[in-house]
Structure formats: C-alpha cells, structure tokens
Length: 62
Image (cartoon, rainbow, N blue to C red; front, side, top):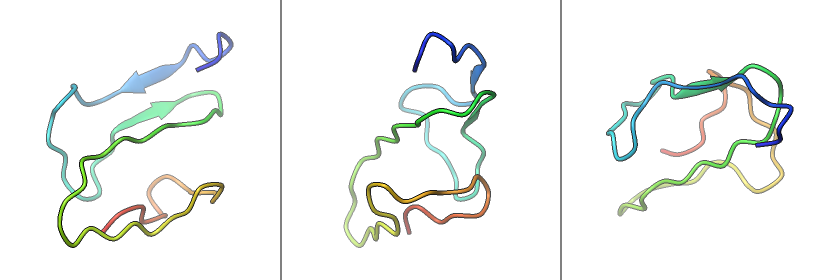
C-alpha cells in the first residue's frame, strides 16, 4: 500500500480459515487490495482483473 494509506485494519491472521461473508479487514482511505487464496476443486472465480467490487455486495469466489 502507498505511504499515504495508514489506516489498514486486518481482522484475520495469516493462514486463518475464513467463512463466507466474513469481514476480512478495511482500508480507511481508498486503495488497491490484493487477495490471495488457495485454489480448490470446484472453485468458481466470479470477478476478473479490473472489475470494481463493493464490500459486502460483490461475490468474488464461490
């Protein structure tokens, strides 16, 4: 993140399992977020590079 982004809050720990719909964190001043997930059989990615997403609304992966 840029130096100007100093309001990043992460609500999970590395390697922690998360549930569908769980809030992962927040960037208080708009910025880019890189999401890294482990692939699993049957996983369907619902977004493409460049898509705009909204917290709590956009389904990223099923």
